Amino acid sequence: MRPDGKRAQISRRVRLKDVAERCGVSTATVSRALSGRGYVEASLARRIHDMALRLNYPLPSSQAGRRVLLAASGAALLDFARSQFTLHVLEGISARCRTLGLEVETRHVSTVADEAALLEEAADDAIAGVLMLTIDDGGMLALARNFRKPVVLVNGDDADMRLSSVAPCNRSAAALATQHLRALGHQRIAFLTCPGRRTIARRQEGWRDAMGAAADPSLVIEVDDWRSDLAAEALSRRLATGMAFTAILASGDALAIGAYRALNAAGRRIPGDVSVISIDGLPQTQLLDPPMSVMAIPMQALGATALDLLCELAANPAAPRRRVELACELLRRRSDGPAPEGLAG
Image (tube, rainbow, N blue to C red):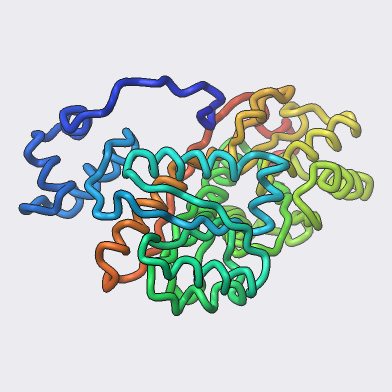
């Protein structure tokens, strides 16, 4: 299922010609860019590689036949049970593994002892490297930073840049959503969030970037867990104090669903009285009343890109570590609109 809720079409095997046509170049150029044999200008080579990844074209890989260990944190598994963000990332990893002839095996990692056991297992020559899903705690990364095989963080990043990572561009996603709301006349934009992870902190920074001098700390509403009921309670308490705002940017879909509950209970119309936008873009947000506008994260692409990055590092261990951020797309549905007349300022 795509972030817009439409089911992806199952199509024939993608050919080199398909990539070439999409990029407007010859098949020979695509072949040189993907194999690394022959010169192709760097920006064009990256565009060709990105298109091949988007079409799930089988990129050349010297890692075929090997295994990849996927370390899933407790947070990732909890998310899997609640909202399926993790499910879509796993689908991207699995599909890319099939294309590249790799196998992926999942391990639960919640302690440093778990991490040590995982890395000991990963030392086997049959294993190409390790993907670590939704792990950006420095204490949990200490051993991984010194591991001799590639370790790539998925939906996280390493503050010290000693590990490569792939994540949505959280800061720009929040900034773009906030800029969109401000263009609609909203000046008092509440930020509903669950603090704790570095990636979520980037979303608050993006909101603050776009709000500028209007980034009133009292507009930040914090929740202790990614639960819609807790978000509804937190927002209801703020509404009871007379807190003034005309829009809400939620740092996750579960929190935004809680905002819907609180606003409905308070008799506030969406978007007539309060506009709501969330960052995630899970398919179920289309089923809300009204359907929710979102900054859609390319969830499957996160997993696929991380696997490609791991293969690159396995083939060239001396390559510099990289932090890859994927752009998010604003999908306007019906939960955002102009600020109520007289309340825009």
